[in-house]
Length: 150
Image 1 (cartoon, rainbow, N blue to C red):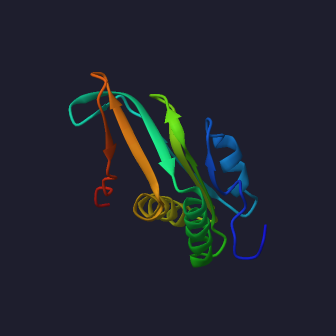
Image 2: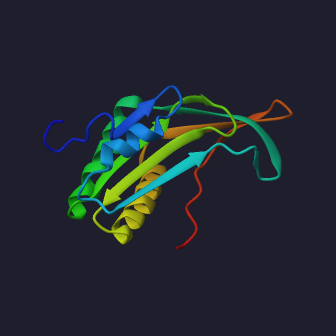
């Protein structure tokens, strides 16, 4: 790992299923009393329509750089905090994870807060686009919704 940059395991894009255990292992350690793992799974519905699949695409160099920046900034903001963000690209079947965010810290409050912040920043800042396909064969590019207030 180079100074100021997250390791590939801790900020990455993948074409296949996400290895949640690897993301968790990348952040966990003896100094961390809390590990929070968020999985964003593909659901079979949206807006009253049946979804048959999601496909994600990205401008890889920029998306990778932004993921690394988010990890580095979150870790720099709290002592002992470690973050991993892995986002899947390509077609993601219903029920499978499209994103995993793993956060470890000495205490749970910091881990929960960093996990939520990581997700909000990912949705807002990283150039990853989502195309939803429906049971009638139609498809649409989706805008990311903001998270509900805490």
